[in-house]
Length: 426
Image 1 (tube, rainbow, N blue to C red):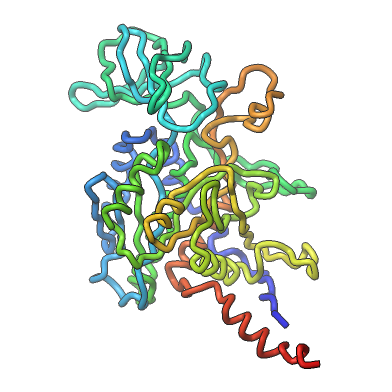
Image 2 (image 1 turned 135 degrees about the vertical axis):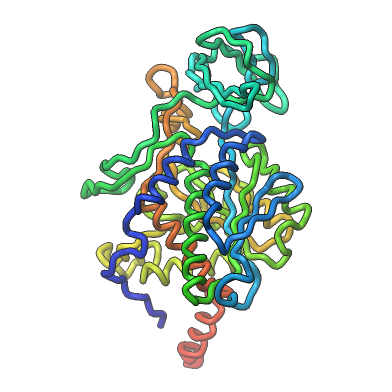
């Protein structure tokens, strides 16, 4: 019969959010970005890279960025193909399509947000000064623009007249500053458990991007101390929100070695069965495809190794037997992600995601979709549980340390046959 790893009473490997990680998480998830306008995020990444020997950067023809463990610095790599963590650097936002007058502009929206959220919404326009300095000006969306393909456009009245607006400048929703607050966690939480929650402009996908950087840095430190890890790399892509454009370019060009094992990182809309605070999610598929089963099983095996138990309680278990390090295994069919792109182009790929609140900044989205929202829907800050973020870091570090070839199902089936096939003989 099968055996179940016993849950551990030890604290989770990344049970606390240290100050440097906290600062990086708040900073990068607050950085304005848009599809094709990721330069500010890239500048933050460049600053993070400085002073971290043992990491090397490589860019492709499309502006995607690879950050890898330097093969010549530290202990030899484990045998096997490279392991990639991928995240995208953009978030749904506006780009100036036309300057109508000194206080009126037309903004193309790059991303997926219901039309109901736009009328009278406040935005912040990020301007480029002649000397390269960046300034901002507020504005309000007044109605639909003329553009319908490939993006819809919206008219915007600025709070003040300015001659500094240029076509190609971009704008983001006007939102409160990022913060981490302690509150009762959502979902199936009959005990009213509390936890830290990050509220910020763009968890999707910048929180996962930070998790990838932090995990790679920990692997760098482990390797510098003499530990053997996989040849681990981070791929940061552009223009995901308008159809995975950066990922398509990298895949078409073969920027990643064809034998690479790719773990795409995402923030996916949380539902009742994928609660915020329930742990990082090993995502078996999305709205358009099912991911590579062998790699998905391997990542799940690492999660079970860290947790000391499965993601869900079995029929012969009690809830109290679940591990304290939480993780989930779900389809997450509310959207699509870059793992589907990588699989289409012949890569072995899967996804790990964070359950996300206010998906694409759409607050009270369930009510807005059902038509039961009181008053016009309004945008809000996206949010994820800090312990889910820390769990994602733990899981990525575990995958970089020792990612098995498969999830081990074949071995289990062979053992079951060897142990129990005798019942078929009477």
